[in-house]
Amino acid sequence: MTEMVYGAVPVQGGEPILPRWWRTIDKWTLSSILILFGVGILLGLAASPPLAAKNGFQPFHYVERQAVFGSMALVVMFLTSMMSPNLVRRLGVLGFVIAFVALVLLPVFGTDFGKGATRWYSLGFASLQPSEFLKPGFVIMMAWLMAASQEINGPPGKTMSLVLTVVIVGFLALQPDFGQACLMLFGWGVMYFVAGAPFILLLIIAGIVVLGGTMAYHSSEHFARRIDGFLSPDVDPTTQMGYATNAIREGGFFGVGVGEGQVKWWLPDAHTDFIIAVAAEEYGLILVLFIILLYAVVTVRSLLRLMRERDPFIRLAGTGIACIFGVQAFINMGVAVRLLPAKGMTLPFVSYGGSSLIAGGIAVGMLLAFTRSRPQGEIADHFRSRGR
Image (cartoon, rainbow, N blue to C red; front, side, top):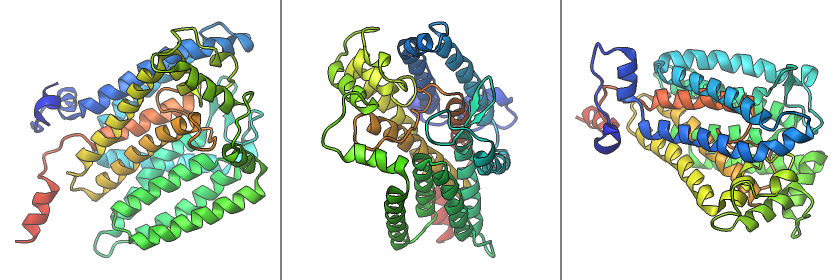
């Protein structure tokens, strides 16, 4: 609490790991994540029972699973946040390699669970989505390459990162998973911009993305159906988008009351992709604005702390994770209010999903590790000293 009011406390040498961790961690971000997880459990209690009854499970089957996966995610988050940036980088690169191999093998061993997109491995007791675990490793790998390119006689890291990103986006598009592909391309673009890329190059890449989207629209029925539904002036009230739109409208400012919402009985993805519609209907605009505030605190607070960071790798990796975290939340909520086409993307730490929760725990743990206070001067002091 002291840090929240007076700022970061300098690291004291020889401290045990837990007191040092507590002294240096960003408590605003940590508190926001814990509250988001609590909100997810609260909304799961409302959204999960109808689906559990439909599938022949106990009423709180999915809530219990979310609590288990969420607890695992929090443990991973805390452990990762205690690591040094160098250890995070090593494990992140290793995780990237493993997740990338899993992504490549999806067409052979993966399944679509009847959703028209091969994104998962069926493990019997659960499912695994490699793209969720690829995101934190991808950011670490790209940041490492870009930071290495800034060293004297360093490798062409920026070019290598672009080639690797194109390959990954290609594999994601084959599933098809255009939402995750766009998210990773956005994360790479943000890091590339922070690393000093010329703006004209980013515009060229944006043009290529638009061209790729046009080609995908004409070649993928799955993609075209979602775009057509988004552009249509009329919303079919019997579709997921129609149910979600109506639920948000019915919720108003204060909501219809706890347990009184109806959208959870009609939306098959009410506990995952459209969880914000359940929040809006039962608790109203107040809870939705509170959730948006929590995501804004995590994203903005992290970026402000990273602006003072002198290490290029930490600055790039932290920026990539913070921006992907914030934009994923924006996309999920934007889809629910029909600002964006349907993407099939979870709301971090709120939606149900083992892969999403655990991978989110890894990513936020990395972000907390990167934004911990370290005994260093401000980056502005570094530039002033070089100019003398």
